[in-house]
Amino acid sequence: AQTVTQSQPEMSVQEAETVTLSCTYDTSESDYYLFWYKQPPSRQMILVIRQEAYKQQNATENRFSVNFQKAAKSFSLKISDSQLGDAAMYFCAYSPHNTDKLIFGTGTRLQVFP
Amino acid sequence: NAGVMQNPRHLVRRRGQEARLRCSPMKGHSHVYWYRQLPEEGLKFMVYLQKENIIDESGMPKERFSAEFPKEGPSILRIQQVVRGDSAAYFCASSPRGIPYEQYFGPGTRLTVT
Image (cartoon, rainbow over all chains, first blue to last red; front, side):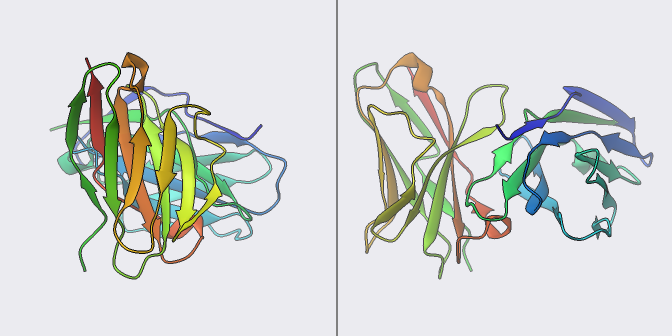
């Protein structure tokens, strides 16, 4: 079965510092997509960053970047220069290339302290 | 361009009643996905629909749950004879085509069963 594991239920970071959220997944597929979603208290799901498995280069979106290790099936999210507005639940998600559904992890709650 | 709309945002039902959750996709989107988020958990895929067709309902409970996406109007997720275990946040996402990385999420409907 395809699963996504987020082993850190909670993380905290000081404002302006860097934090890394971990995610591992289990699949036998070779082609797939990986995502990080942010869910603030409003509960709106916001796409933070995505990675296609066939691309070796790690995706980057402003202060957000990923460390994609395909052989290790690891997909961590690094948030640089953390801001108070980054405080939220962060969900890692996986989708095989030929399907239509997202498989989510259980989430990591990120707190940002001033 | 308005985002994905869901209504109601909050719905309270007594055990045994019916719940109807509505989702209006973004303009130009003909693919709709429903996900359920139980408290303190990640989102779980329920069903994927295109206009007038159910494409994948592998995540739908076998009884009491149904979904439709008519030619005109919003997509409806219907839960008959609700039980306390149905209390959750239900999210709808839409896409211009069936590709996971283009899913845009609505704000969710929080269903409470008393």
